Amino acid sequence: MCPRHAELLFEKGDAAGFELDVQHVPRETFDGWLEQLDRGLGWAGEQWPTPIHVAAGLAQGVLLVDPAGEGEVIQQRLREPAPRLVQVVLEQLDARTPSFLTELQKAHDAGNLWLHDSLAVELHRLVYIAWFLAEGHHPPFLKHLPQWFETLDLNPDIQHLEATYWAVGDRGARRGALRELALAVLQLGPPPDDTPPA
Image (cartoon, rainbow, N blue to C red; front, side, top):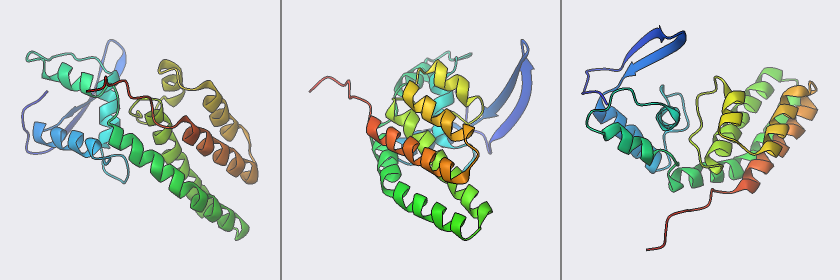
């Protein structure tokens, strides 16, 4: 954990042949990100870094320096996403999928292919976030997604549907594949609550 800084600082480097992106974040800012996630926020919009991806990095990462043990406590807290966050994202996917699919069809029929593909990307991003959360993980940044599917042992049937989406070239078939992908994620529901009863 780092002390408070006036602004976010970003550095690039490498260690042992691995590319590193290092970000120095004021503790107050970081705590604010965690609070957003607890309230079901911090996963949408253009904010960078997106708090949900920061949480994924810390949950799956290795602590290099943590003399006070604060990082380990936070890392354990982030091993599973907050129930409110999971609920909000799955509700958004459920509520928005039908309208997304309708607008995708309209855009295609009108020949607005850029709009069509932009909407498809937006829905696909929502599907990804909901999928990871439904399986009990904060979704990582989109880089290296196939490796994350395997590392986190995500649902193989949904992995197959996701691969099918990218394999088909026809936009109509892709809309159908995206619909199936969204419905499959919704059927996962939230992860089971392992918290012992009070």
